[in-house]
Image (cartoon, rainbow, N blue to C red; front, side, top):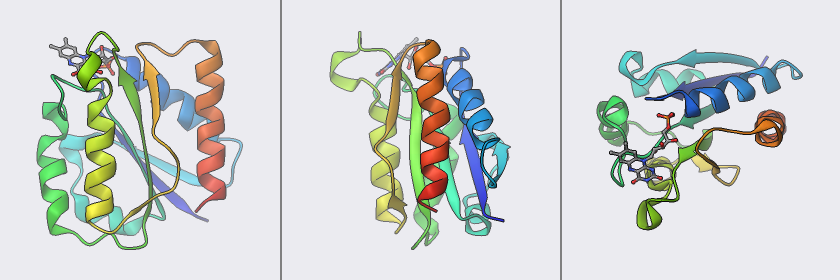
Amino acid sequence: MKKVILIYASATGKTGAIADAIISGFEQTNVEVITKDPFNTDPAELLNYDGILIGTYTWEGVIPDEFMDFYEELDYHDLTGKKAAIFGSGDSYYTDTYGAALELFEDKFMEVGAKIVLPKFLIELYPDLSEIEEAKKFAVQFTTLL
Ligand SMILES: Cc1cc2nc3c(=O)[nH]c(=O)nc-3n(C[C@H](O)[C@H](O)[C@H](O)COP(=O)(O)O)c2cc1C
């Protein structure tokens, strides 16, 4: 059975709601998903999984504090061949940095050899019902790419 690790940070629950929808999408698949929070995750653990999903909001144009150590420690790991995708919530009020943390993570994962297999899944603020459905499809699509 393929295994996916899903790590997310959510200060006010919006990225968490997207994560929950993605996790429920995996229930329709035969892939095992382990959910973790960034504080308790060493990037070395990523080597044990076929797929990596990162969920993040953006804080003043950058990665939120909860993810900072994890993000910086990624530099010391070779994730060649790992399949990854990034999701999260942003606020387009921040025109220049809307969802910027998702791109920062995409760039970082590519730098350490991982392959970004799906376009980033960015939702404006809280996901509505159709976006919840899209999130479930995102999970299913991710499994087909593992
Ligand atoms: C001080 C502050 C700075 C923020 N900066 C950004 C930003 O640069 N880009 C962005 O897209 N959203 C920004 N946001 C909005 C949050 O990313 C957005 O509310 C997101 O939905 C929060 O997700 P969460 O509920 O998972 O924590 C900012 C919010 C606050 C309070």
